Image (cartoon, rainbow over all chains, first blue to last red; front, side):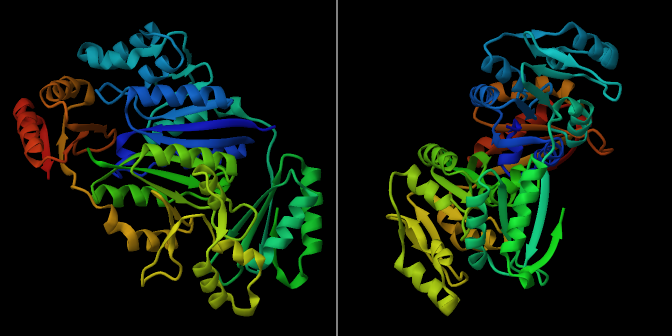
Length: 243
Length: 243
């Protein structure tokens, strides 16, 4: 079983079409390379009750959970409160974060800034040399900011801790349409039920009609499935094989 | 109360980082212009049980639901079965769709192609001149394909039926940081509790520090809130106002 992950994006600005999220796609690509299976992405508004319900569900369903957005000093930054409520703990001010904020803002430091020192009680802080502020982790929930540049810095600083056995992937590009290909795919799955098998048609590509993806964490299992698939296909239908 | 919508993206290829979805962002922008409030986006794998559970929850929570992906002739196209199971009906072959497929494929028509004639029992077909195939609608659930070009064609052909009272938006760009701005925003919300208020910092923009969005479906309510916000802010902090 692969390590699993859930991604929770928090932000009215995504749902109202004001910004296009880039963090989920980034995280999906990165986690795949690390061997982690993303099972769900959900986008919800900046509302404490919704955040609490989702975080609770995600935290028990997946090995790791990433939240993006809703951290900051204003009224619509309610992720920390949502995570705390989800896990049944209070929100407290963390002395280390208070110190960092005091260093950063100096005499300008006010109550709004100090909201950024709040954490769910019992949270861990994960720092790194590349980061100005550490990342807040509560049990298996990693609280990341919505700003893509900082989101990436924070994830990159942590990512090795998520590494699992890699996925092995083979792509087979074929010149037959999905309708004709379907039987081949069904037979392949019947013989290799644990194969992760995807079929993606291209309607305006002159080179091929369908990209077939075969994947497994077990290299030998994948190789056997690829062999049996290529044997099954008419030679002239195979445009290209990529491993 | 605005009309609400939920968007359900179905596809392993999104979760595994092989493709970046563009349909949800498109739909969020389009629905916002139509006056519809998107309350949730969820991305799940091509698994019937998961699809059924989500569609059931979405269909009762939101006025309209859009699914994207998982329609086609292969093993991983299980959206129709998921929608049927969600709403407690059987999957049946629709004579009109069978006819269209027969026209399109002629003698090449096979069982796999005919899978694309399947609908949840009781589904409506919504056709349009601009479309080759009609859109399948089951109660409040609109089943759309994952291929962005066809997704857009299908949505565009239908979109007028979703139109609701418009959202009115005003953006105020300010030169003060969020920490200083927070009190102004809180006071504004205290006086105008129904205002939709967003605060989006920019960390590397030389022109302004925060973009504040004020929104309402009630033009008078918005105007009053904008007036009171602009009165409250120090004049020199207001970079630009956009309506």
